[in-house]
Amino acid sequence: MKASQLGEFGLIDHLAKNLKKGKGTVVGIGDDAAVIQLTTKLLLITTDALVQDVHFTLKNTNFADLGYKALAANVSDIAAMGGRPTAAVITLALPPGLAVNKLDDLYRGINRLAKKLKVDLVGGDTVASPNGMMISITLLGEVVPKNLLRRSTAKVGDLICVTGKFGLPAANKFSARILPPIRLKEAAALAKAKLASAMIDSSDGLVRSVVELTKASRVGARLWEERVPIASGANLGQALYGGEEYELLFAVPKARIKSLKKLKFGISVVGEIVNRGAGVKIVDNRGKIKTIRSKGFEHFK
Image (cartoon, rainbow, N blue to C red; front, side, top):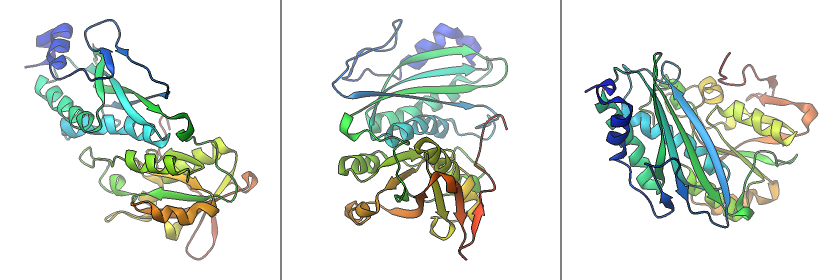
């Protein structure tokens, strides 16, 4: 069956069968807007879109993996601010001839992660698209005010740390089958322990994330090539500039570095925050300071 055979409202009814209202949702899908019970915590809002032939292709994509990845990309943003995700709305732009079973697979992937993280899927929109498919998810989250982390608060002298390894998505041509890690527990531990002075997720690449963090914090950085954790099968260039790892990149005051060992997950120290005037540079394994050759992936370029 194709989407055009169900029509807009029939398709909405079909997809809504897979959505269940959670405890925090007063009104879910089926009304003009969702209604969520607010708390005394801060509300976090993020959104991310995946576009056909930019982020994925119809022929070579497992739609369950695509759905999982679409939600995970948003979860990573919430994690980077020390929060936890609560509710999501999903907007789909669809070619009329797209098979409905592919959409079922897409929601199966979304639901797999949403159920694991206790995220309510509370609505969204579906529209026809004559030029390919797009999936856009807006995710809400919450964070205790004292645990909020930002990318604009790194200080000169802080060390730059990361979770995980880099380069695997680029080495596999950014296949949707390479599912990103979920670093919510790690982020929460860092926020609760007050170890990170600033944090960002690495979805746009290791170097790009360093650039964005230093730009927001009005500082510079030195990134040490020999310290970069490279995934098996990837090379240094892919680790530095590839992207889509969805790891955490964060600054830690030197006095707190020893406390990181108390956390029960792997962390690599990959650089240092320096004065803004020194810029963002890479130090190779011979100690030579090099200008970055690329800032990573950027749309419209």
